[in-house]
Structures are given as structure tokens and as C-alpha cells.
Length: 153
Image (cartoon, rainbow, N blue to C red):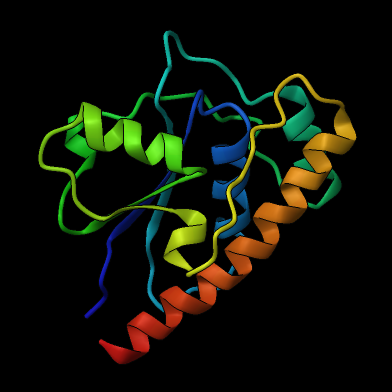
């Protein structure tokens, strides 16, 4: 029996790091189907993916051109949903702002690493490229952890 039905990557605005993470994980092979999504902590109105983030995705054979930012909501928390933030500050904000929070970790924490993913907002294309490479490395390890959990459950 699979551990989670849904995985939500959470970032500040849901316009760069979390949609990039979503695209990367959707391109990977998981033993069990899991719905992958991304949400933001501060989404005042729907926005498309950051053009630099999309350019980096496209250069790596991926795309989130139809992505529109969405806010994290209380309905997103349940036993079967894994919430992964980009950094500890975002995790703490969730723990502070929401009741009955379950299964919330940073991406690095979930795979037993201390890595935090910094939003490249305001940086140049190479900053977004470095962020993508960090995300890809961490998510590759995340896939191993998720697949091992399936094999052991």
C-alpha cells in the first residue's frame, strides 16, 4: 500500500522553485502513482511561472508553461499528502499558520540532508540554472526514498 497519494512542493510564491520541483518529479519514475502539485505560501493572485524558471526547464526538456500559482490551503493537509517545502523558514511558517498539520518537511530534511533551496528570484538565468541543478539532484534522491518506502510498506 502506498504511503502517500499526493505530494505538494511549497515555495513562497509558487512561481519558480516549487513548479520547477514539480516538473522534475513528474519526469521521474515512481513505483506508485502519486499526484504531484506545487503551491505557494504568499499567492495574492494567480501568476504564471517565472520566465527564467520556464526557460531553464525548457532547456532541460521540461515545461510548466501552463502553470498558474496557487496558495496552500488548510484542505491540503491530510494523512495521505506529503508537503515538502524549499527551506526551514517555509516549513516553520506552515507549522505556525495552519492547524492539524501533518507530513510537512523540507525537501532536504525528507531525504536526510541539510540542503535548503534558495529562491533565485531577482537573479540572472545562471542563478535559475544552478537552482534547477540543485533541485534535480535532491529530487533524484527523493525518488529513491519514495520508491524505497513503497518497497518497504
